[in-house]
Length: 397
Ligand SMILES: *Cc1c(COP(=O)(O)O)cnc(C)c1O
Image 1 (cartoon, protein in one colour):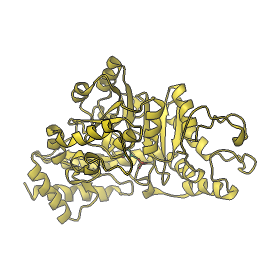
Image 2: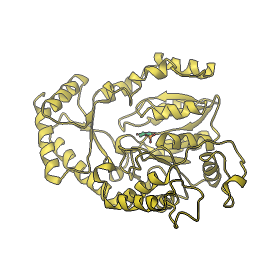
Image 3: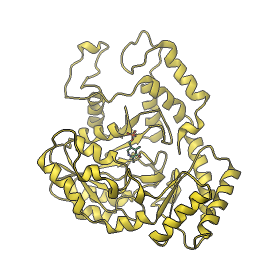
Image 4: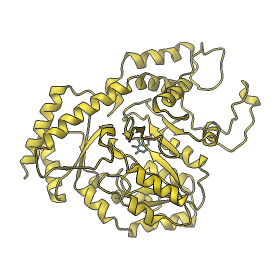
């Protein structure tokens, strides 16, 4: 998955354009910049490649989520439904909005369980935030149907599923808004960066303003612009955008490599009857940034983890033991370790997560192993790795 593995001349060329004119900021300085608008160009690339009306670049995937929640008008006391298995950015962005993260079970797609989502809806629910974890996608038809019936926003966190599709549409463009991260370890990297995508014209206008202190971006004198709304600084720099612009031109190549490597590894592991794979709602659309498989029991899974280590295999995770991606170890959330006071309502709700049980998620995550699919692997290298993995698994069966 990490695009940095194949950092090269294209990225350097785009970056040099910026260094040569010295305008590191995405707005203004029209005369100095020699016609280079890297952030604007990257937004246009995303809009055309993803067939979406509006792309708003941000400083990170996390701030892209902040922006999406803000333009949806989500704030104090509102509830947002999110999965137990995700990156911490999901609840960080919800808490930053002053809203309440409502955690629900995942299913064998390793993403939101639609049945659990429907049960968690209350009169305060404003949005459902599926997170397309590890390269593949949530059951988007079912989630969209729930959102339509209950008049809720669908916000897709597609940070880990860059280039995945669902029934012919790009993941991240199906909900009311969607996000990608371009941090250092994502399929396409800017170093740091993110994007919020939407077909909603109002959301796009507010996102453009909100990410830049509320600037209306009318005219060419920043000091004379008005501020129709309160905003923040969530801007991306031209330097970061330039790297992303070089990378995104290679996205088809990157996804093709991921799919080839994923196919080889999956083929190898499929020979072991005890191994089963996550359900992918649209298998053709898997971006294949990771290969996720299950062992029959948690005990066997731990043995496989040890066997992988003993066989010198790296870049795989059992998220049950991981501090960042699964609810079990989110003690800072459950103990409301905020540096500043948070509302009593939010505090009591997040402290309440301690008493919540997620048996379905526990079962799935404790039996899951997630293998990163690297872009730099040569074909023979992946075949050898597949052989090593099957040997390691067979050694504990
Ligand atoms: C990486 C990631 C984010 C946050 O992206 P940053 O750019 O690192 O802030 C959000 N959600 C998921 C699922 C991610 O993997």
